[in-house]
Amino acid sequence: MTILVIAEHNDAQLKSSTLNALKAAFELGSDVDVLVAGQSCEGAVKQAAAVAGVRKVLVAQGEAFNHCLPEALTDAVLAAQQAGGYSHILFTAGTSGKAAMPRTAAKLGVSALTEIAGVISADTFKRYIYAGGVLATVKTTATPVVASVRATSFEAVSAEGGNAAVETLVVTPSSRGFKFVSVEEVASDRPDLLTAKRVVAGGRGLFDEEGFAALDKLAEKMGAALGSTRAVVDMNLVPSETQVGQTGKIVAPELYMAFGISGAIQHVAGMKDSKVIVSVNKDAEAPIFEVSDYYLEADAVDVIKELTEKL
Ligand SMILES: Cc1cc2nc3c(=O)[nH]c(=O)nc-3n(C[C@H](O)[C@H](O)[C@H](O)COP(=O)(O)OP(=O)(O)OC[C@H]3O[C@@H](n4cnc5c(N)ncnc54)[C@H](O)[C@@H]3O)c2cc1C
Image: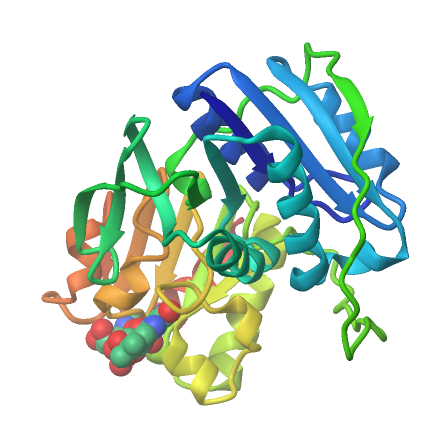
């Protein structure tokens, strides 16, 4: 078995989801290569080569791979597949993986497995269905197996201890009617929601801007990332990138605090793997209490204010 992991990175650094995908790869076999496609991705290549157990790092570098547009990334993956004949191609379940994986699978004439959460054997995997409510065991007949890896279901492998060979991959990107123009990044001193150790999240029980301003202060004091439900994103109380859940981000911090969140299945799908879950809700029957390690039946805004004062 030979496995190709497609690195998620920002040129300078590998994203931690790549280390989670590598864990899934090592559960499948020991011949594991990593593909890094980017414009000036020397930093990410160096980090990938330093991961213990990685056999080889394939590098597709150049302007065509700026910001990892899915079409160009797909070209690179197909070139790697042609050269290496891998049995498994694993993507991260981040933005670039989600966009490039189905394109790759379609080009290879196989169906893709989204967000595997466990490896049972070379062709049998676990993955969540029904908004995370059921963990299904699925068997695939596809060759190669093309899958994305749910980061929160696999511990990250150590980023050190290796010294893999680095090889240039020659890719001729197909011509397209579009190109990368620009990106606007929101500057923030806060930890990234996907990798934060602590997340404080608010729902409709915080009511308004004032409630979320209080939550923001608490997040700042705790050095936590801000999370939210879709309900409050739809109310324009918080930006959409804070949404946690089935159609938002999947997170698994050491501490997840949920204030005024009911615990709808679609929200829980995005945070139930958190190590410790604390929730505050004024309804004793709130479903969020069922997945919480600690819960408090109280007014969420009052608790946030008191906690912020005392910390
Ligand atoms: C296809 C689909 C995908 C979806 N994807 C997502 C997703 O990714 N993420 C997501 O979050 N949702 C998602 N949803 C929406 C989801 O079903 C819920 O509607 C949403 O999560 C509810 O948000 P909420 O908990 O903020 O609001 P509500 O369900 O209205 O809950 C508010 C809670 O606040 C409590 N409360 C009220 N006042 C106070 C107070 N003063 N103090 C303390 N508690 C108080 C209430 O008791 C209640 O439990 C999706 C829905 C669909 C159909």
